[in-house]
Length: 546
Ligand code: SF4
Image (cartoon, rainbow, N blue to C red):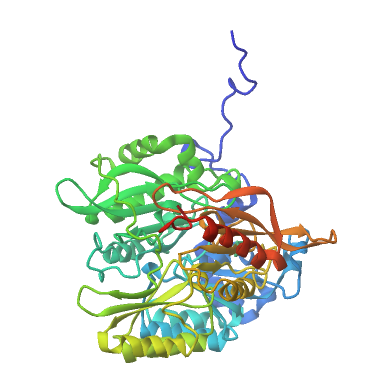
């Protein structure tokens, strides 16, 4: 007879699921959300805080509900990474905000991009970041300027509503949706319908944690559905009908997990309803007791996709969805839409690399003007911190490539520049341990010098802490910020290295090797060693990832 383990007969401790009766807030975050819905902060910003200034902001709003309006307090300048964990929040922050404007599906007009650029120039010290979730993030924002920023954004159909917080964040879509010949279907309308109906809707303004969505029929899976909380992935069923395969439970941060297929086929006209039902399952059954278990990936890990499907159908949709096929693997390894792509109408989409997403507001305005001059005023953001100008006729492509290059915006960047991403990092992020944006730019520039002929795609993702906003686990070479010992035994900024992560067929998270820690000063040497080793050993046609 085997002896039962100590915990095997105990009832499982509640995880704070509303559907099981755990309605009393179980931690300060849940208390904050119950005390006042996050959406209510908008009116207080307009009526009180923007008029009375930073010091008038209620602490629960300042470090909690402001996020529902896309606002985070900004890291105070000059505080080193080693202090991040030991200082109180008020010691870490200054009186400015980071502000995120959501760009659902990455779709912008030139007028909208001029407004985005103008806001950065007028209110954000001319700094902006194009993020890896198709948003634009500002820094140096004063609370006094927020109502005017909102007025400008709303004049072009944009907002900061639910850009952060425990809510439905920006919904990712393929930047070339509706444009490429080989796409499975165009998700533009289903994104727009879902956003219009549910963003800013109190029905979903108190979720257990963030809720990341993608909806796309891109053959390259450019929205990276493997790591979103809920994804609608384009497929064609046996009857030849285009629709979506539903995936749930992806996410990175400290416990990375890949999304799992639920196994159902969702018609385009059902997407908004099915999305709302998935979101309701997360709201009602998601774990709320511990913040670090409050993403849906933990629920899916416990339930499995079969139980999720059963609850979704029985309790929320009240109907069964048909079984559906798995999507075809991504057609291309690189999912960034950089370069010149032929549109189905014979025009061209011209995608280009910024410098790890960092840009000025003035340059965003210039890009908007170039989109008018060379295209038809349509611009897209990608999930790789890049931009795409659409509708460029053949005879104007090279002139646009040259005009962009004048501003160091590269349509044909080196493998290193193309494949390097960086999160916000120590410059502005209160959670950061390491500076990232400038370091990543210096790193790709150095690798361009040392390995000028490197000719295969390579992903190098630089992150300032374990939260993995720039996805260190899915890069060929992923850097996770931490304090490390240098040769003199001093603790300095550095990185834990994760090697060999990739998405797609045989998706795998990068492996953390014992001892693979480098100081910032050693990162270029480290990358060079790894990449030269690959060049020496590779077989003809071999990519770095496989
Ligand atoms: Fe900040 Fe960490 Fe996210 Fe970088 S990974 S932006 S340092 S929370």
